[in-house]
Length: 409
Image 1 (spheres, rainbow, N blue to C red):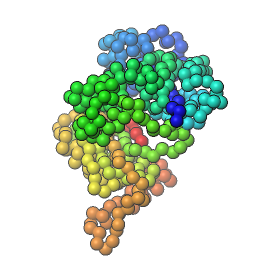
Image 2 (image 1 turned 180 degrees about the vertical axis):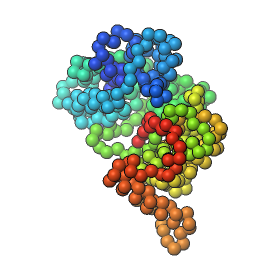
Image 3 (image 1 turned 90 degrees about the vertical axis):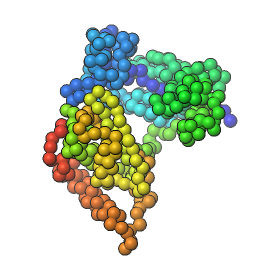
Image 4 (image 1 turned 45 degrees about the vertical axis):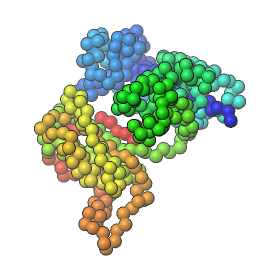
């Protein structure tokens, strides 16, 4: 069977590149797109090549960036504009294949295997043509990885930037992929990389040649997945663009306009987040087993904790109570909190494992059914009259300057 032809198209410095389309006079100056300092989101979201060469890094604070690059020009972000440009770019991709899977707002996987005969081009030639068209028609550059699987295609797009095509084949994979740091491989996070280093594994080649059973024993099931990825044994398909994707988790975070502390303020913040998450879970018909909380301090230290429930839930009250309990196990109410994030994962369809209610059901089960009825009724009221038409009483006790900063699904 012939290999697939997979592309990973990655827009270079996307947010900054989009902003500079309307600000061409800034093209020869170091530019960064930042969050809103007034709402305490004063971090670097994206930067152009000149800022990057000056040492400016994504996710660092504005003041840290300006210490490295005093003449750095900071522009506010416009996320709707970025989404519009993302759609326009994907429309170009659609002229080559309908197997397009957006990985994020600025990245997409393309499977062009079935299009090559019609296009009368090699995969490398298609990648070069896409780079040219996006540069000319949209005004930004992309880097494209070409390979026989998604994992190596993504490594290819990261291998050389900006505006480059890198093809990784079975013949050159040992030369290109194996010397790369293990942290470059998809799903190797900081914690996993530390575990790999303790095994003497530093590169993707080290993973590929490692004992498969040892990786599984030390890292868990993801160890076997990483071994397969490192060896190019990735057969995950490219999902068509318009196929509805099941959410793997639902989460929301907020950065407060001032640091909060004390049980009352923490409870208000958690309650607000849990209300949003539970509403969205019910909207997509999902319940979750795993509840997680992430706490960020004023000096950007991150503390997180999660718990797997015996029964899945989409109840605001349960999510809120669990997060308060998790908070108490890892943090102190007397310490200031900059931001909070709540996530519910390990989702299932709500109708798949409905609790069996009977005359023998305990008080907790019956209580949960009543709560679900109440919270569903709140959803109906908000749908008809707007989200602000009804609030949980707790939210009215104290204003803490909530600013919703991120949602995930």
